[in-house]
Length: 602
Image (cartoon, rainbow, N blue to C red; front, side, top):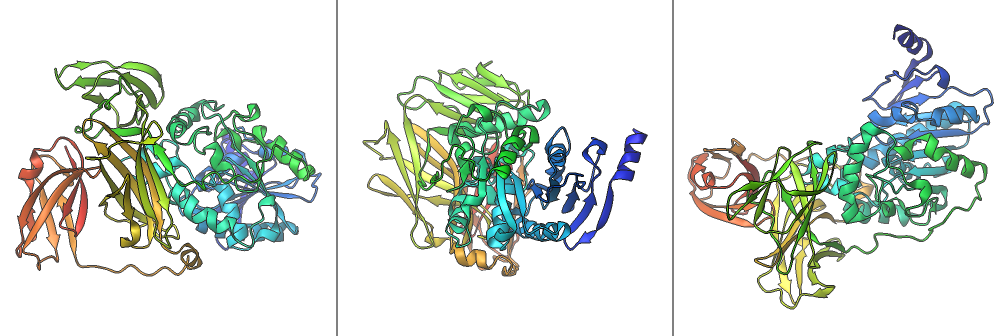
């Protein structure tokens, strides 16, 4: 161990800062210790050793997550060794983990300038894994470095976003995203931000050069070579599969298809049945990269005109049951004889029980499939409560063919959200008594800068067979959406998605000219936020109100109860009694139209 540490000290040394980067020189691959730990939380350029047979070509690797960048040259990844043996100069760039495509693109643009100057070359090849591929197009197009990039190889890059990032924007479900180890930087990786901001901006930009992009998208989320990482990627792939289809555990296959780029693998290609981690390894991807560098006219299986998400309609045949909510039950729809619960759970070895509402007896459910962090259970009864020793989210699918669809109709800068209830691919004969509602949270500006906002409850207006919501009443920004439809005794469905309000072009043009936050002297919150027997509503700055109406909703926006609070000069109001009778779970408390507060009933 001391010898290995000595090798690190002798063979790796830190160079001066290059503006925003720390520079580190690596030894030759054969002398690089597997225990090497370089800077983990600083934007860093790791220079590979220049090979004795240097061919004058520089390959710049960018992972897209700062503390995972070193996996590009460590942990049995053969990229460094293979590029060195073949005479290529390798450069490994770590940008930031959580600041998104625009900040990382600016850093990568700087790194491209540094690399071309350092090695006196006109351009570099980029290899971008995951968000590194999106950072590449940001550096090339938005920050003007396209002429310094010869080719981009995008490995498992979710150009159209990932449903996992959509889930991460729901505060009560973001633990599921953390199973991937990629918890930060999700704002600009949602399907709706990618579809409505990133893709229109880049694909229609005059500096877009899609022919420079070579795409490697994998299809085998269940087939990872790294046993320790396999569980997390497998479970996330399990979430993706019913919503986005074939995937590598993080990126759906069709999401990796950048419009008009060269696509190496077809969907379910036998050469690409591996996961999101494996595609970042040289032993899997280097042969295809090398072939294309050496023969740029090489024709792979091309899918050059694919725009997989131009259709903005999303369909759901499931609803979601969440472990923290005692009010969530498994209910069979009208006409259903059984249901399948696809469950993701935080505890890898979670156990489950079901409580029968009629008898209050507990039993062990019938498990159809189980592996780390993922379980599938079948049900043939209704009015069941699912219990576990772990946090979980269960996606309940049934056999009756009822679906809910969400379509975004773009109208100037404010989309109209249109919901349909579909039965056997036809509009249901009667949508009377059907309620469509949503819980929205403004999570970011158009520039992708994170914002902390309160949830809001929105109602959809019925018009003929559609349910509509006009977003023109909302401020500019990026919104997450937890959509629910429900018809008592018939069905309920959920969709997790989001939408964008505002002028995309002007918003991106002012990325670094954000308006300062406006401070307010008004405040409103519940203490304690986890309510047991007692709860106090604290308000400051609302003395002009004589009375408040407080309404309690569950996390789908369904109204549970309401009560009145007499307004006066007091700032503390005891609201224990109306909250004490609530079942355990997550709720929203709306005070007039002033503020909506999320709280937990224990």
